[in-house]
Amino acid sequence: VIRAEMFGQLTSGLENAWNKLKGEEVLTKENIVEPMRDIRRALLEADVSLPVVRRFVQSVSEEAVGTGLIRGVKPDQQLVKTVRDELVKLMGGEVSELVFAKSKPT
Image 1: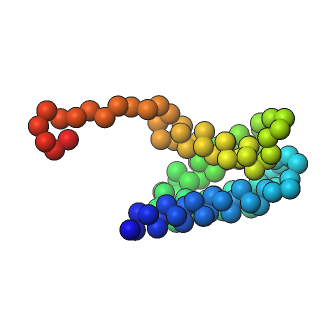
Image 2 (image 1 turned 90 degrees about the horizontal axis):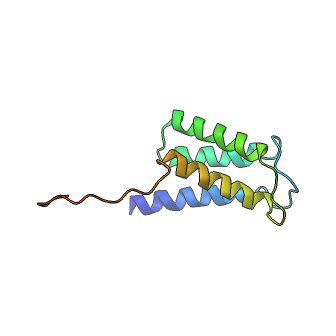
């Protein structure tokens, strides 16, 4: 129950960040300040350590502003992709298979 609530809060925090970019034409240092604050807050409330959150927010900010907007993609969608890509990198970047023990428990 607690885990579900934590993920619900994380989802809400990230959705708030995307919503703050509605109507924007491009991602700039100025217009991602508030969304990044929401992302930072959401991660901290989900018990992610402060140093990890700081590095993550810095990486996302640099990547989001440094990337040209893809034609047909809105800035909030671009930020979603950037956050997703950085989360994948943060968690290892590749899918690894589960290794099951010969005798239980695994």
